Every structure is written in C-alpha cells, then in structure tokens.
Amino acid sequence: MSPLHETIVLERTYPATPARLFAAWASAEARLAWSAPDGAQLVFDEEDFRPGGVERSRCGPAGNLMFALESRYIDIRKDRLIHWLETCRHGETLLSSCLLTVEITADPASGGARLVLTDQVTAFDAEMIAGNRAGWSAVLEKLSAWLAPAAARA
Amino acid sequence: MLGSANLIDVVHSDIHLERLYPAGPDRVWQAWADDASRRRWFVEGEGFEISEYSFAFRVGGQERGRFRFKDGPTIYNETAFLDIQPGRRIVYAYTMGYDTGPFTASLATIEIRPEGQGSRLVFHEQLALLTDGADGPEIRTAGWTDLLDALGRELSV
Picture 1: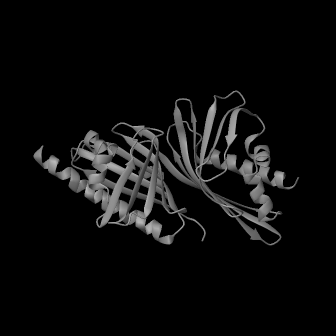
Picture 2: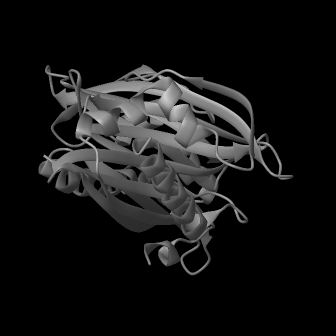
Picture 3: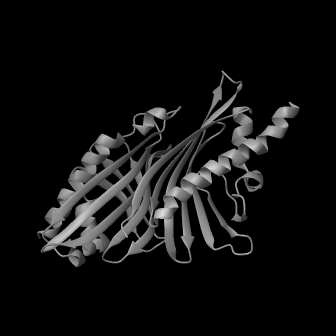
C-alpha cells in the first residue's frame, strides 16, 4: 500500500513544574513507569538520552514483545524540548516512522506546565495512524497519573 | 497551519511533490540508488561546494555530506535510510544543520510507480523546523523542485 502521512498534535497541562515534566521524559526508568500502554509490556534494551543518542526497546502484549522500537534523539533542550525520530518494526518490516516533538512551557494560569506533543507519522498500515493517536493519548494520561501523587504531596 | 498551535519555536509542515518522468521505474530507481548517477543530479548542484560525501544505500545505512552554497556557512546533511523497497519506495530521515547543531529534521518518502510509458514519482516530506532562521518549508520546497528538475535532466541523458 501507499504510505500514509499524518500530523497528530496533542496538548496537556500538568500540575508539575517544567523541570519535573522534562525529568519524566529524560530517564528510561521514569518512562518505563508511565509510557507502556495498558495491557502492553515495554522493555528498554538501550538507553541514551542525548542529542545523537539511540535507544532501543521492544513492546507488545505481555510475553510477546513483537514490536522493535528505535528512537534517535535529534535535539534536546533541557526543560523545554525533546525532538526525536522513532521507528517501529515487526521483524524486517517497517510499520511506521515518526518525527516526534515534545515542547514544554510553564503555564502561569495553573501554576503547572503545558506539554505539546507533535507526532509526524509516516505509516504503512492504516491502523498505525489511529494506533499512534490512541497510544500517545493514553500515555499522556498515564503521565498525568504518574505526576499526580508527588504534586499532591507538594 | 498546525505549526501555529506550538508554543515554542518548532514549526511542522508537509511538502508534497509529484512528477511524471518519461523513463521506466527501473531507470528512475537507478538514479536514486546508483552512486554515480545520484551524485550527478542530487549532490553536485550548481553553486555548491562539497567538502565531504559518503553514501551507503542500505537499510540502516547513511548518506553524509558537508557543503557550502556560494559564500554561505558549511552545512551538513545526514540521512538515515529506514526502508528500501527496490524499484518502488525509499523511506529516509535526514537532518540538516550547522556545526552548532541541526536546524531541520525531516522524514521523507519517495514512491516510484509505473504510469503510461513512464513513471510517476511521489515525494512527501514531513519537516520540523528547529531554529529561527532555518530555510523553512518554502525554500525547502523550492530546493526539492530544483532537484526533481535535475533528476528529469539526468533521466533524459
């Protein structure tokens, strides 16, 4: 099939400082806690959060980590921006490639931080577009839950 | 545009170009995949001074170049090939930048399809503009338009 191209933009406001929100993305240990979709398992094989760094992980239903993810960080600006390329493969087959941008700013109105995620997707399977949108939406909700306890303590 | 929803300075846009060439898909493919042919129409543009160039056309391989346009600063171009379907499709990601870092990141797809006696080439690029003063979607579109013209000349040789 012909490739499909889509730009998905998701915005959320979190009750956390930009520094804390950025930290949630900056370590694989933190990401592991909030970025696996419900019912899925995520295993990080390589972590390298710096411009030019490459990370590898696998995900899928528990016990069947059929999808290989590779992230290549292009630009990182502390507490403000993370920009990376992410590919998802099943065996040798490229299912999707995405240019992802996460932008973080202080949100004076709420005293928290605002996050804008832009996902420029090229997909070779129609389900990958909807899957990207649903997946990132779910993950951003889980990030909210992950950030909430500490915000409540503060 | 979507870019206006962004809070900082990254601008996201799409570039889509299509061309009909009077050459078969195999010939068009060869112009992208063959080192010497690619170098003629894609790398050695008029006014460009190339200081470094390498090309490893395989999934996981890279094309890397450093060049100056007229009296401008040195710019690098680093491409990673993500998917290669011989004769039909190339998916690649590339960044362009100065020595201080990238100014754009792109995800591009080239499709080649037989059409009539020739081939249709479909080019689609998803572009993220990372810094102020980078070339931007209009200039990038003009650049690709010139390149696809150059490809047309290469195919007519």
